[in-house]
Image (cartoon, rainbow, N blue to C red; front, side, top):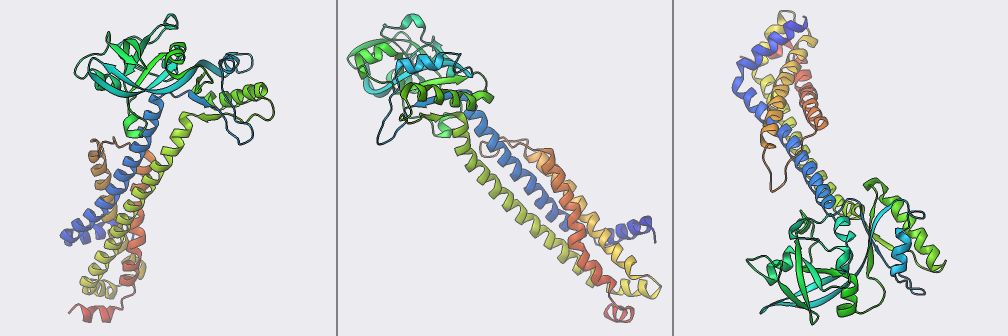
Length: 394
């Protein structure tokens, strides 16, 4: 009995029990489609997190003072200048010292509590900020009472209109708003927004709001995203050399830290979704076994007749094994098509991302299901005795 004979016999067997075969295909289709779709959702969520973190500045690094009980450290303008020196920190590109405070701001009769960030021109490029209207701070703004608001502060202080050109009273100082920056894409979803912010020249903020003293931090950009770790190592070396051996190392916040923290949650979600999909696939496999066992039981007389006419055990087993493989393979192909259709649309705000290895794995599993879950029914059919089978079929 050659492969053509096996396929012909399997085809006739499937056609003779078409309704059952279709239901089995549907089970496999749902299982395979679930695997591909849920893994694609997990991949899409991970990519979404990565893109949103990159929108905050893929090469940005926040340098904050280190801390220890014996020797608390401080950051100064001199530290920022030392980091900016390309001879000792070649991986560093732009540097922007910052001071941060809180104040109540007022425009006409509308007030809001704002975070005030005193900084310099490079800050906005480092943070990959996008203008909504107006302009960023420039080097010529140092010493002047001008400000840039974020979108949240604009909405709070001048609802329904542009804040550019308005006068904001902050810390008893009138600031002229020269620009508004957009909220970074996905910042709210990442939980990285903390209310409205007013950006102003660092010397103006120190002189009129926070007072002169150490910096709150230094915002730095690496020359490339791949140079972030090198830049942090060089900054640590520079600050350690300036502060002495007893000085604690600085604390860093980089996109990699945020990505790692959020990426862990995304990976857990992906694993959970994959687990749920695997369960549905296992249920589909059990369904294949159940259907094939039922098929063997209903076709006992057919098996007895074939054995009486000289059919060998491998031939009987092969026929049922090929049948289960055909049914599960067809169901797997339909499952792939179903997943390709579903993943064309966003799911709960996430754009699914299908990768070829997952599709190939799911398709391979559907073929394997026919072999693995069809083996026991096939062996059972081959083991029937001709006389017993003929009696059972009457």
